[in-house]
Length: 157
Image 1 (tube, helix red, strand yellow):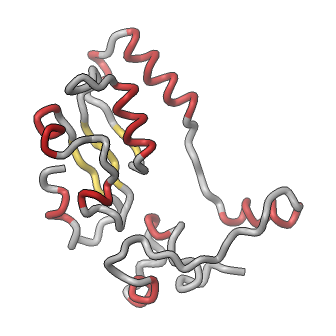
Image 2 (spheres, helix red, strand yellow):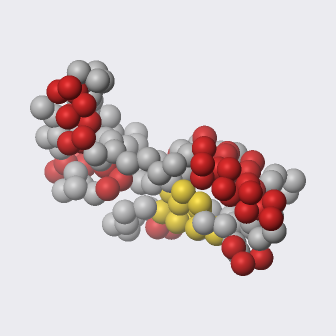
């Protein structure tokens, strides 16, 4: 997280940060990515101690990150995990199975009357740039843009 903003001007699909106990003192893990200036792309915690840090357990860490809209986590290291660590990982995975958004499947459900029609909002991924700017820069096809700027990116029925 210490160097994450250094990469915000690079054309990346997502950010990946590492988190350790010493870093958590300055950049608390309970904060959302937008509070660290990372609101324009998904953020994955690419490395953190499996045993937890600064009094927070593995379960507390991954739940905090999930609830603060981080895109995923990769703990360090699986081969050193104990039984309770594996149980905590399995419990989180069972509670939060992979979430996939397929617009075609959603539309099929709408046609069947199972769900309401999806909204066609022009919501930008951050306050820094408008949807019109994102579309003009060719960002509509980026994976991190799929839930944003639906009207400007012409993803509406």
